[in-house]
Image 1 (tube, helix red, strand yellow):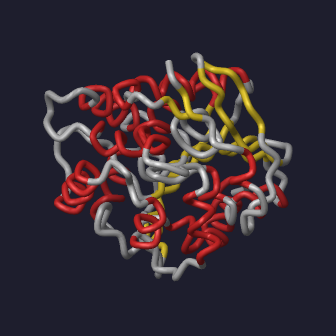
Image 2 (spheres, rainbow, N blue to C red):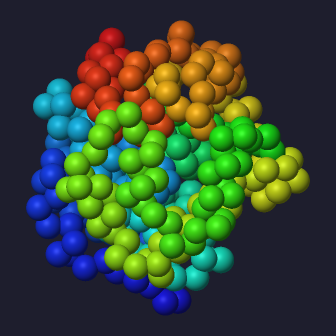
Amino acid sequence: MEVFRTPDERFAELPGYAFEPHYAEVGGVRLHYVDEGSGDPVVCFHGEPTWAYLYRKVAPPLVDGGLRVICPDYAGFGRSDKPLDREWYSYDGHVELMTELLAGLDVRGATVIVQDWGGPIGLRWAMENQDRVSRLVILNTGLFTGRVSKGFLAWRDFAARNPDLPVGFVIQSATTTELSDAVVAGYEAPFPDAASKAGAAQFPLLVPTTEEAVGAAEMKEVLERLSRWEKPALVAFSDSDPVFPFPQAGEVFTQAIPGAGEQVRIEGAAHFLQEDRGEEIAERVLAFVHA
């Protein structure tokens, strides 16, 4: 298997990001993860086309609040290895790699934070490893069981037509914050060329758009397991996201999960709400964990 490994120098002096890298060999690839602090673990699952950099505003307050923050990069993203064959990437494969990584870290009593593709991956991991999970934090995401929004279909069509995904443009287009050139460069750091974007380019095409498509049955099973989840769950969606619109997208989870209360509205934020309102999200997570 041919793999691209982003040079370390591309991650030097990224604004707001001073975390030490950690690595594990899993399933034939080297996976990167942030691992900061001590105490009960908080596992942060990123989405597309982001990486652990997305949680740079969320992690420090959680660490200061006495928690251990773990932010893995999926294969094909961040500082993790990037297989060049797009057909190598699959929903099952991403879940399997995260399962092996987190088992190796002996994660227990975890608060799981998910957003974007972190929902299908992180929530499936949580439901398949419920003995390791204490609570859920669900941000702007969905489980794709065959029906998707028009906003998502537009994004999928854009990604299909642009395999050399303009990562910085995508991030800037999905935030309310006007990002500096340096921050945009931080999101683009893992991807110096089109070949390195194989995993990012493939992600939108992994979303099942019919009930018979690969992955739909697995995501339906996750939703069914969530309906029996009795532990705490915090659902917080931003108010300016066309892909997962407020409040409808979040209500899927508040109505399904017995342990979920009323949906929290994150004001003035778009799809990448960790970028727009990272400090507020950290405050809400700390209050939720310590309640």
